[in-house]
Image (cartoon, rainbow, N blue to C red):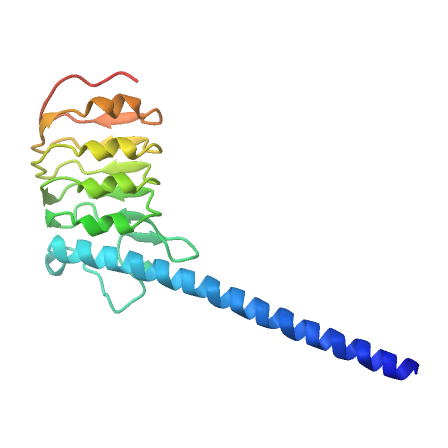
Length: 195
């Protein structure tokens, strides 16, 4: 009797362990799928940047057959999300694409000393984790998008030495985390709003 009870308990524990293993496997697959989706999203954004800014002519090109964490200037976290993009002084030219906003985990964007035109796309306002933007020494020639004020975590905005026209967005003074704003060497008008 004790033996049959023991076998029943062992069978029950094995069944429970199998269910737990299936649950863990499903959870691991779900996590893996989320990581793959993030990697795909970030890869698409980076490829869009590469194509829009003359990637084949860059000084340090990307081998797009490699994982994105091996690409020059790309820093990722353990999940493969792009946290930093530093393509400074790399012969980028053209306009930044709207798809760059797919980099939803990006905190640092360094694209200084290139020949980028236009300006930051309006979609930059959805990149709410951005803390630092360096786009100095380019040829940006469109106004600063008003969506820049959506970047509540932004600490540094450096757009110096471009050809940016128009007024400084009035609500830029509401960016309470902004510690450094560098706009000299542009065709901007108006005052820098106080916070």
